[in-house]
Amino acid sequence: MLKDKIMTNKTLWERYKQYLCICPSIGLTLDISRMNFPADYLARMEPEIQKAYSAMEALEAGAIANPDENRMVGHYWLRSPDLAPTSEIRQEIKDTIAAIKSFAFSVHAGKIYPRKRARFTHVLSIGIGGSALGPQFIADAFGTKSDKMKPCFIDNTDPDGIDRVLAEIGDNLDNTLTIVISKSGGTVETRNGMLEVASAYRKAGLSFERHAVAVTGVGSKLYNISKSGGWLAIFPMWDWIGGRTSIMSAVGLLPAAIQGVSIEGLLKGAALCDEITRGKETRSNPSALLALAWYHATNGRGAKDMVILPYKDRLMLFPKYLQQLVMESLGKEQDLSGRVVNQGIAVYGNKGTTDQHAYVQQLREGVNNFFATFIGVLYDHDEPSLEVDPGVTSGDYLNAYLLGTRNALYDNGRESVTIMIERIDPQSIGALIALYERAVGFYATLVNINAYHQPGVEAGKKMAGAVIALQGKILAHLRKNPGASFTAEEVAKAIDAEDSVETVYIILDHASVNQDHRVQKMPTALVFDSRYMIRDLS
Image (cartoon, rainbow, N blue to C red; front, side, top):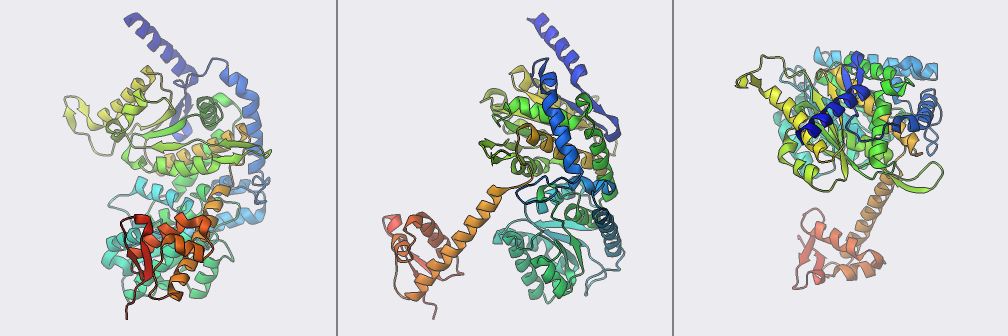
């Protein structure tokens, strides 16, 4: 038995040496050896991954990569502007990066300042989805007590959540610079956050406009509001950048620069990773190997979930960031031929070693419906480490838990990928982001889908709008009948919404526990017979 184990370990070592992809220019290694693909797998998939290289090459050259919206997809140009297909785009990118650096310098130097304080000390970003997840990840990854400005975020239309952020800012509202991020300017959650924050400034006797910056498309609703309102600055969002790949645009770079993060490092790391992952030698292309590992694990049909396990606190938000990047890009009902394929890979994750005390029990012994990605960081921290046991530091334990969990999963037939980076710095994080961006693009070609549109998200927005319209009809009916009470079914019938009684019932319940609409609920023994009316506040 012991001999078999030794032979297994020797085989694993040989397999590790065979498949380890080493990328010294970005301080990153990718190990796919613990994905149990057969010896001929990469050779068999070579024609398909070559197609992915060609598709990516066309995308970077300016092809219409998103036919649904008839637009190019150019997030790779953001870190290599000279690759952009037109001189206008090249110059816009360079000018925007220069403007971000200049603006951040002026804010830090006190040349751009609030009206009642000497300088700004806090920055509040308002956005949602890709306009929030990327900036939040960057802020958390690099946040220290030495930040030039303290970052805060509003990324939802939850009034209580907005209240919590404003309470955290407290008396610092006057020295808080607010960035509103929305390409169209019509994103409801971002608009609501902007309105709530603007109201808070006014209540404090402050001018919101003299504290506000916009990141938006030229000519958008937000652009017009900020232009006419005399906001401090407006930075562009372009139609060839999608939200989930916007982190290297003003969406991510502006908040990062204002916080004090080196945006040059982020851009350099991404550019270096792009150089490596443009290579068509698959064994030395980490993004291609990552995509092929996903394809093997999921049978090209999303058959297993992707569990992201970063063993570093500063990478805690990376799984959340990847959820959108991977799931919004790959979760599609139809392929490029119009066939119903219901593609996608579910992503979830937690930081190590927190996961040791959370869901690793199920990962090792429960349903085998996942593959894991371990992300480790070799460099512990800047200070000499305390020995928590003789000759052992806390960082040694962190590394041991990564390796131990990896072994424990493999011993029980669970597959995993391991990514190791040398240290957490802007260049390595830029490279890590670029690694996954290109892997998503490669995988999308392997399964023949459009990674750059999001019809499901748009459908949800439209349905939310329909619910708001239905609420308007409900409240109008109650107001037209003061003093009268109705069940949800009676309201639905009266407004010709009998096929939406469930929604009517939930809307009424929500309205009744908040004072905004003056709806009163009269409970009954049978909860669905409860009656609703407009309160008389006279």
